[in-house]
Length: 279
Ligand code: KIV
Image 1 (spheres, rainbow, N blue to C red):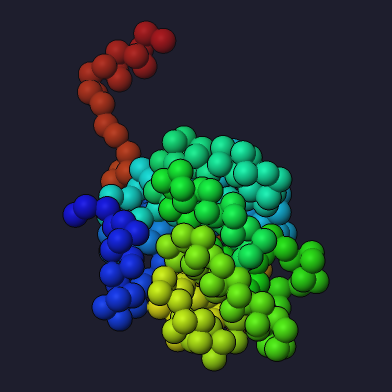
Image 2: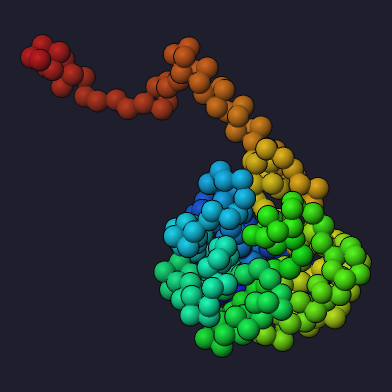
């Protein structure tokens, strides 16, 4: 099956087909997402929290991203791979933004990049797109600005904020973004933005009116148990299953029940007997 591309994503919106997207950070999880035919796999900078153990996405570096993007690209054959541009890797000037977007494609192997912000980054988005690198935008609660927001809260409930979000979404579309993530945006506002834009919106905590949905893999599989955000749905409880397996394994090792002959290897008795005598 050929890899999904940004035209396929545009067509999905045009046909009214909902677009599923999921994060992945390594070869194994990417392979599973690909086997489930999820059309878009995002190597999110959420990797900072769910994989690297930071308390925000801010410490994630370009080298961290490239390392994980490579794994995800190797694990996928059909999915469009989107790589997040980390905090302050696209805001300083256009040359910095172009260099870093290019690295995610050239060194990481991603097909597209994602960056946070609206009107303030529209010119940057335009420049990157002009160079042939498709850009996905990200509006609403943009986690790289958590310190400016003063926490992870819903964005766009007040008139001024809502008007700005609409302007930001339009600015991204005009700049050439092929899709935009709406994170923690009230359902009616996200629906309105989705209706106004020709490009697809991908929601996370933005209600069912978006053109697609994205979930963080560790949240939906119950692997990240520090907390479960309200916008996440747990489709499996792998964290518990893994812990149970570890407890059983440790118990069997302690009790001498593992390994058994089934997990072990034999050798020629004669050689063994010779060794026992000679050495
Ligand atoms: O980093 C990430 O996982 C994201 C999603 C929450 C959209 O940006």
